Length: 336
Image 1 (cartoon, rainbow, N blue to C red):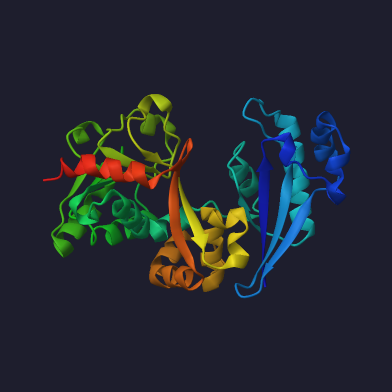
Image 2: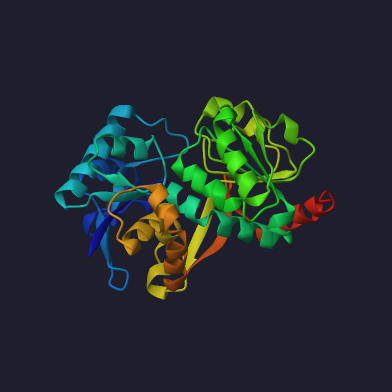
C-alpha cells in the first residue's frame, strides 16, 4: 500500500485542532501558540480499493491573510512537518496551498516527492478544455488556443502534439519561440495545422479563445496584457491584478462519485489527482512526460475511480458555470 502525506494549512483560529480535542479548553489567543508547540495533529485515512494510506497533518503555524509570515517561525514549523513525515516513512506529499514556496522548500533536499498537479494538468488538458467549452456552449475546434511557454521540452512537446489534433487554430507565445520551429514544421507536415509563433500577446488583441499559461517567468508573464476576449487557464506564474482583463482560471476542481472519498476536501486537489495517477500506473519516478505517454490509461483510471471535473476556480474562488456561459455568448459573436 502506498503512503501519501497531506499538509493542510489553516487561516482562522476557529479551524485549529489540538491533540485530544483540547482546543475547546483554551481561549482564542492561546490556541495559535499551542498549535506551534504541542504534538502535531494528524489523521490517517485508508483507501483499500485505491491502495493508498493517507497521513494528513495540520501545519503547525496559523497562516492569515494579514500576517507577514515570519521566516524563522515558518521554517521551524516546516522542519517539524518534515521530521514527522520522515519518521513515519512518508516520502510523497501534496500541499493544499503553495504558501511560502512550501513545495520548493520540501523538494530542495530531495527527501520528498511533492505532487503539485503540473503532471495532472498536462494529462488532463484536453478534458479540461472540453469542460470549459461545454459550459461556454462553444466547440473547442472553433476557438483559438494559445500556449504561453518558457521553452520546449518532452513534456510540452507531447502536450502540443496532443492538442494539435483537437483544434484548428493554435499559437505559441514564448521569448524562445525560435526553439519551437522544428516542432511547428513537424506538426504542419503531419497534420497541415499552421501553428503561429509569437513573442507576446500584442498580436492577439483581435483574437478570441483560450490561452493556457505554463510560463514560470513572472516578468515575461506580466509584461503581457491579457485580452478580455480570452479565457486564461493560468498554470504558471501569478498574473498581477493590473494585467487581468477577463476570466482567469487558476485551479480545476475534481470530485469523485465514491462517497468514502468525496467527503475529504483534498481529493479535489490537482496534486492528489497527480499522485493517484502515478500510483495507479505503478510509476516510481516522477516524470510528467512518462505520465503523458500513458495518457489514455491515466484518464481511464480516473474515470474508473469515479473522478470527474466539477468546476473551475479563480483567484477569488469558484467561477460559476453561468459566468462561463455568459462569456461563451459574447465569444460566439466574434467567432467566424
